[in-house]
Structure formats: C-alpha cells, structure tokens
Length: 380
Image (spheres, rainbow, N blue to C red):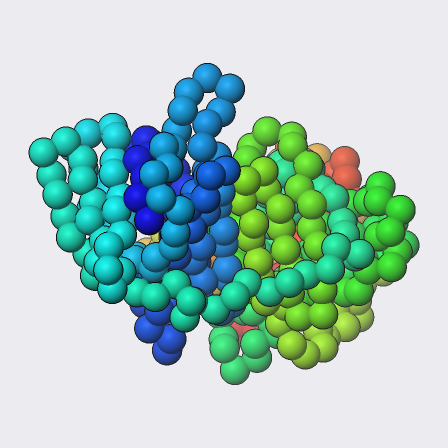
C-alpha cells in the first residue's frame, strides 16, 4: 500500500474512529486502527467490540485532491502511536507506505517514521446489517434526546441493562428512557417513518450514545438508524457507527410516574437552578448533596442546605403558581441540577404526591420531556 493524503482530512477521520478505541480490550489487534486504501478513497476502522466506527475519506471532493493512491492495500497500525504521530507531523502532505511484513513508513516534510503494522486479515469483520428495519431522525433532535436522557443512566455494572437508554417505539412515537433507580429521564418525539411501527424496543449503552453525540453534526441533517437483532447502525454522512444492543429486559418504569399530584407548582427554571447550585456548594462539603425545599404560605419556596463545618445557605424564590398541600422535601441537589440543565424552558412545572414520593418535573410549555428524582428522608 502506498498513498499520500492531506493531514487535516486524515486527522478528522482519525478523530471520528478514535472514539471506539479501548486500551482495555482483550483482543490485541483492536488496539489498532485499520486502514483500507482503494481508488475511491481511504477507510479507517476502529472497534472495542461494543462500538465500531468506520470513517471514509474520498480521494477528492469538489475543490481539491485529498488522496493520491500509488498502490491499494490495507494495514492495522497501533492507534495510540499513530494518532499522536499524525497530529505532530510537520507538513500538510503525508505519505504512508506499507512494505513487507506490514512495516509502515510515514513521511511528512523532513520527518520519516517507521511503525510495525499488523495483518489486516486478522481484524474482525464489521457486522452485516440488513437494512429492512430503519428509522430516520434529524441529527440535532437525536443529539438533544441523548443529552436530555443519557445522564440518568446507571453507572453500576451489576445491572447492565440500566447502564443503557431504552428506545421505546410505540406506533409513531419514539421515547428515550433512562433510569438509575434514584432518578429517571424521558423524552418523546413523533416519528414520521412509515416503518417505525415495525421496529423493536432496544437498549443502547449511555456511554455509547454520548460518544455518538460527539460525532453527530449540529446542523439539521437526517441520520439513518438501522436496527438488527443485536446491533444498531447509525449512518452519518461518511461515517458508519455500529453499537451493540444491550441484552436483557428493561424494567417497566411507567408505574413510577404518578398520574395526579398532591401539590403542583410553577417555578422560574433559572432562579431555581441558581439557588440549588449555591446550596449545593455547602451540601457537597458534607458529602451528602442534600438540599431542602420548604413551601411557604406566601407563594414562595425556601431552598436551604447546611454544613456541619461551614454553616448554612437559605434563600427564597417567588413562585408563578402553587396549588395543593404545602410540603417540606429533601433531595439530592446534584440530581436536581442535572435535570434542570436539560429542561430548556423559562418555567418548569413540578408535581409532588407527598414528601417521600417521586418529584416530577416538566417544562411548563411541553409534555414530551419528563424528569423524575426520588426525595431523601431526613431527620429534621
């Protein structure tokens, strides 16, 4: 194999696939990046068995020649060294030449580096996915849905299914649900695809979705999502992003969400978030993160936290609306802040069914996003 390629394009492609590189893999060849060079362009592939990413760079675009191919071929190069060395090469044009026994020479400007490559035939093949079950979503919407739910997945590997986000598909509705037993986040959208009704529910790792989100373009381009028995494929322009579907049955979380409330309030989102953030500073020092909310007679709430060493924070917030029983409730301030950050609304509706029942939060002007956190029992 022998070719020249423009540095910026190679770095961009490496940046995409490097998200699938893991140093913890038990398969040595997966610590490398596979390079395939053909007349049409160069394809980079990386995988950690949970995620596989393939990025294609064409030989030329509308304005410039990106790759000049002298000899087609393939090689696997150690990812960590390859990524670092390409970034630090001095010239814009990079030459890559693979000789006998996959010895690879990289030249740029006055630099010449030799790397011992690996046999590409030993690299695992990417899964073949039949494109009969497919969903299409705008890139910016998918990115937003991931942001609004993936933070609530469990980090406890003893329950692997809860480390993922459930894609619940019912009729023309797609709902993302994430739950770690202490909090829940969900977001629902209407799907236009005719074949959405034939798609199965799937669970995808929250870590995987966060890596996918980094690749998704911000502009409103459509992403094809192909679902197979144990894999899902995201097709993003010149990138193919494969993810393993988590095994197991996701628990029914619908019973957690009350249908009516004992107390309801509408509160300014920014004011509440800032008050809880200040209270969090003290609660964090005691390593509890516990903040208290007390509802008062004068259409206000009091937010407070104490630290045995530092003191106490107390402040009041005017409510836009409150109805029902006045409660005193304690909660994890970090969980509350995480939820408030993704509720993109000037005012939020908060519903309570008691001091020890789930707290439900929604934007005042929307019902397609819901955040739930469980309160804490405190002694006073």
